[in-house]
Image (tube, rainbow, N blue to C red; front, side, top):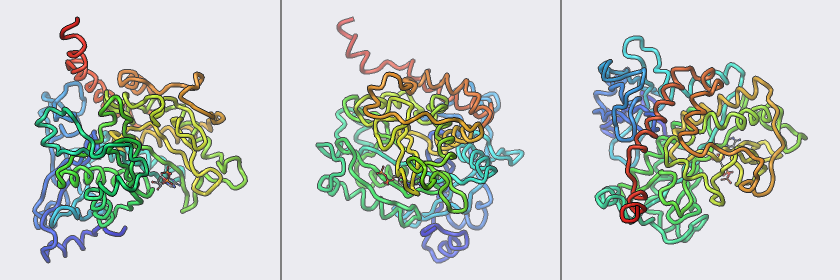
Length: 454
Ligand code: ADP
């Protein structure tokens, strides 16, 4: 891949002084980069084989709290270490930071050196291996939508996250004029990512004030998730370098549309797209129909992986381009699943349920598990829905709260069989904790409603 560094290339860049810092990172449950900044000489001489991190990194929340209820770690077990093993195929420059490269790590058990089963990269690798056993390769693309704000993260936090002003004053969907005004962030973003080996396709204005979308060319599932994670990090850092904030919160304002991460999916074998069948209706192969049938039937099971926070569910609102129903439709943006590229070799399914806050490893793993089940059981695909799916009363609803999605996750036999009970118990606890934290909060809405009038 253009722009990625082999270990030997990194070594030579360290010895000639081009690189002096290596970010050694794992991906946490929230999809964030967590790790250490190594002096590059130490990394190439010693630490490239392994380093360590506290195992609470996979049992915490956005606030770095230490919730109870995880079997994998606790105060009782002393919050020990995981091994971070750099995956040397993921070394890439970080062009927006001087003299810096980055590597992603797999997390291993400190004693056995076995992969930590609930670590996001391991969760995805397991489903990729299952597909591989069937002879298939998943090609995926996860779109990144986000809002840019006038002020910086620090200024916004200091003012209590009030009076948030997006960088533009009007809906900028496909607008060239408005997005020109955002090029101070978006141009370096596209170019730095490209130079780092991320196959950037384009960015475009999205359907709200200050909302942008970044598209990355589809690739194999693990690379897709690695690209997404790196790109999301880049968006925030490059916004920060420009004195602005970028937010991937799915619904930051009730009156505005939310941000999503649509996931395009197709299966291939030896470079051949298996979802396409010449002459078939819409060009869809039987394999594609079985995959989609599983994807749709099990959507309630895995929605917690596509919408992991309380706020994620605020996005699912009629007439906002975010879906409310778990049905499919042909090139129709009101359905949870949109058939794209019908009748062509590029025929694929786009899942529109995921919010911009999804963890791309977990989201893809869960959808692949559902698709594999559809293939294994030769599940039948219902005919497509048509028209305004928001108004289709017969179509099944997406679970409407994190509480509901947590229960479907907890009881999903499909996901338990595909991922393991320990993994599902772990992520059920993560979702439960988010709800518990929210239930303890006294919100602005409650105060405004009740303070004087209750
Ligand atoms: P849209 O008009 O919805 O933006 P695009 O043609 O730009 O559609 O494609 C959206 C995403 O789908 C892109 O990231 C692209 O790389 C990806 N994509 C295209 N073909 C496939 C495929 N066969 N499998 C998976 N993803 C694909």
